[in-house]
Image 1 (cartoon, rainbow over the protein chains, first blue to last red):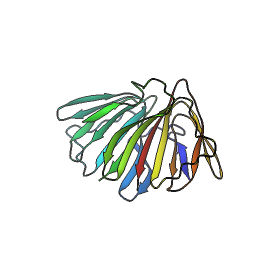
Image 2: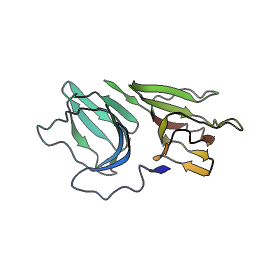
Image 3: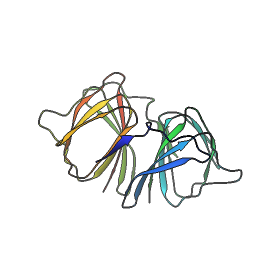
Length: 105
Length: 105
């Protein structure tokens, strides 16, 4: 049985975001992402082949899409369609920002 | 763009758990479940065809499996394999218990 807690323990703060794959089953992948102030590099946009459903559990963040911004607080979720370009403008560092992301075709 | 907050607004407390399907995409289904003290009826066991990944966002709960119990607090997650029988022994009513569940084949 795969069980744990997304909020405890958290990894030590690092230069990059810390990704943990919790589950890969067929074409579905579930990750925990811990952000500690990181943002996407200037000019960088995610452009993914998969659909991503992401929910913020702790902390705060600001996502940018080509047509607007989305401020995320605990409980906020968003479904990002394949090839919907987006970037991470800002994440809260302390306490860390914790995301759960579900990727599927 | 499908966006919202799992914690706000919450539905009014009801006799039954309140399920909201946030996303259905191919064989993947994502639901928010709000529990306000409900538990599975005596002798009832869930016996599902799908894999379920479930994370608790707020509140608390106790799941029973045939070989043990799992106490869940905010951030707790568990992957429940198909046909792994389980039941909900207890959920916190106030503040309500909020779950995110991902179902897939």
